[in-house]
Image (cartoon, rainbow, N blue to C red; front, side, top):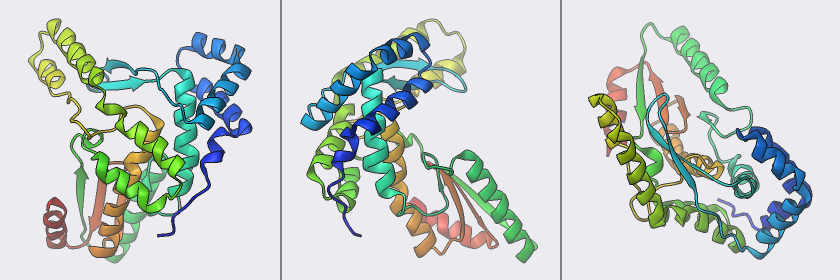
Length: 277
């Protein structure tokens, strides 16, 4: 695999920062905050650029909260300025770098390869296999608590195999290790306890209790753009294993949710045994 270098400059390009400010603010739910940010856009651009050039990225603490629809889960939100930095890093140092390594079946966080692309790909594969076979079977997989179980050292090694630029790696490693901060688990524990106090539904209590905490050197923050990119990159080797080692043609995954279609039920069982190892 050819390693890339000399790409860090892209994140502090003024035009790139300006466009990313517009994009992030267009998606911020708190429109009052977004309008205030845009009122001082030039000052924010200068501040963001200086931080990125100096690599003095002392991110603010995450605003951590629970959402309950469709199920209880933690979201970790950043300030608008930190979001802009995170989006810049995700796009120019991760998404653009890894795009040509992904298999066509990998969906999520890719341009024109979101949920609609994944659904259409499943339909295409179903039509192809139905045309050739009277019977077919599918295997549906998901990786339990995926983002909480991403191993920091493994992820760093994966990044190091592709990225040569030390400035890039230093910044990426800092973002990866941000979940080691003790305040994060303290906040999650408090949110869980506060919610459980007011619940009388046993199912909801159990669902809340099962919200995981972060193990040291494991997990990516929930809700960040870089985490979405890390999540797909972490699975890249697994996707190639399915295609090249197990010779599975009809595979579609939307991040950590997989559908594998095959005409041989026993071969799917064999593949499942291999995957679980």
